Length: 267
Image 1 (cartoon, one colour):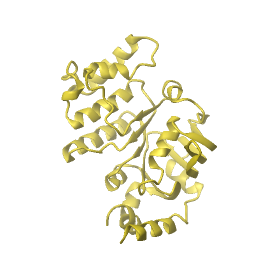
Image 2: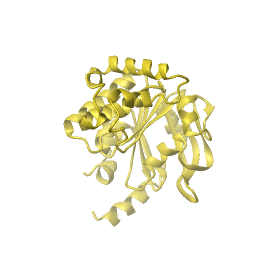
Image 3: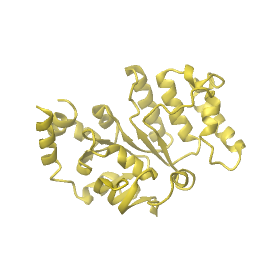
């Protein structure tokens, strides 16, 4: 299929959007994160059109779709990086739509793990973790949180005094995720966790995310360029097309959906 054919079929695919009842059923009775009829974008450019989402406590949800569909914009909007023209974002029933990113982290318990390599290369591993607690009232709190993370991840503890630039790609990703954990968030927004990593490090990163969800009770909202891997990991999958929700279901169900596979999973 040509790119044009895929785009045309994707638009037709988006014509039958799932009702909110489907989203509620996937997330359970008391979703942690609720997005309702969101219209958002950058400046005057609207990217998301009447977008709704539900994800429950200690669940994971993966957003997939073609380039430009608005996947990362969903994460940006939840964290406060976009202009919101209409709709609402709620966490545990509290309206957080207009909170600034610093308040999303400090007051609402939302942390964002960026897509790009965001470690401070010339700082040590330990100093990078301290930076994750820059909103804490005292440096002592950040240092105490860093010690908890070193206990949790001996791989980082062994490298605590090394500059972050010497870490492998997988270790850098672990450090980025760990830095987001310093403030002990309820909700982790994770943009492209496997991007640029070798296969062995991809497996390591997804094992870490699985532990954070199932052992530590974190809720994960993620975008993953390896759509099949992301859907196999996640409890819930959403397909976005042109800034709108086109399909929603259990991650494993979407992997098995022939239309999703043909249009978005490469076969």
